[in-house]
Image (cartoon, rainbow over all chains, first blue to last red; front, side):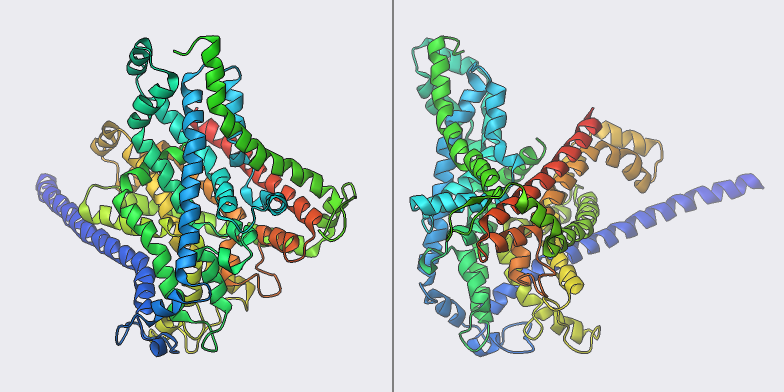
Length: 296
Length: 292
């Protein structure tokens, strides 16, 4: 009697479990679709708002989808105050300078830390990571005063120096790890053949560490392109504004008797494009950089 | 390699530019900040030594405490949301399937855009008359008239800003948790499957303990990030109403730049830096122990 009950129960339970697993899979799939939609929606509506005609972009209540397409908002942004090209060049120039400064400083330093038996090497390494312990937000006032005295405020070089100081510990850490991981045999052979340490660095180590160098450059770019507070403090003249600064200023300024929402969305779209493109193209470097950077 | 005394000098030469840079642009400003914090200084008048008066002044400054408590409140609310939410997203998207990987990419995209820019985007979405949040909530019948999200009520502004920042940064924790979960050796997860453990038993008894170090590290990074919050409040509320939503960094900024109280601003910066340092040390100790 009990045996028959047991027999009929087992397959039913297994089937129930399988059914439940199947249902769970569909539910989780639906959750994935819902989450992706929620995450992408703000970006999509912003891009859509940037191509609404002027009157529609200023409508209250707002429309979800543009009724017709227009590049008016981009045109207004193009000629807003100093003009979009000025702000784009400021942002781009600062980011490129920050990449160059970061690499020029950290590639040789990381190589020295990885390969040379320098006395007090660990102490120097920890000192170079100082910016990890002291948040740059706390150092802006003294930096501003020094920069103002030597004429570095309102210059791309000044802002790039600040961004380099922020990015230096991360870069040094990533590059040192990457150089340490290269097998030494090749370098030793080159030295036996009479190569100098500089030749070894440039011809052997830098090419072998390309992924790390790409990661470092990528993070320097994204940080500099997006950084706000430092730019707000150091860049006070309209012509020296970076893209986030001019957009934050445009948020409150009036052109049609209120905030020009369409132009703001055009600016947001333009600011977002390089970041998203770089991420989608260089996803591998991005994620690996994040992992090594955070799990230090 | 490079054992000779001469090559030791070469090594130092490679290090010299970076050391000089950190001395000039991190260590020197730090020393300068210490010096400034002991002086009264407004750019217009020469600095005057006042000892610890700036620190005593902070202690009696009502707005300093308002900002400090507000920043702690913001951090206390947003951190669990980011960690628990990020972990659940990681559990969902760490499995190998095209849809899960696509979801991971979508959740991560806001991480790569700027916080300033995302704050401007949400400033628009939460705008009373022109924002899609009010429009959608009214169309769904959740609210009957537009809500004033930002800058009128401190708590409501805080929640709106938290929602926007969660959207912006939740993918950061998720991606690191995914890495940690995927690094668990398959033998371990398979063994627990054979033992007949349910999914949630596997999560709480196997996956979570094995990824605890990463959880603590991400908590450290997000607590510090939240304690240094500025962009989102500057852009979305400008500290309104009545500086209720002015965070600690915001208050340092207000004192140093618009008000030009440089000595006082430096003292506040130092207090802020020490607070951050305390959190860093405590959490690093925690992480070290969990690792051992």
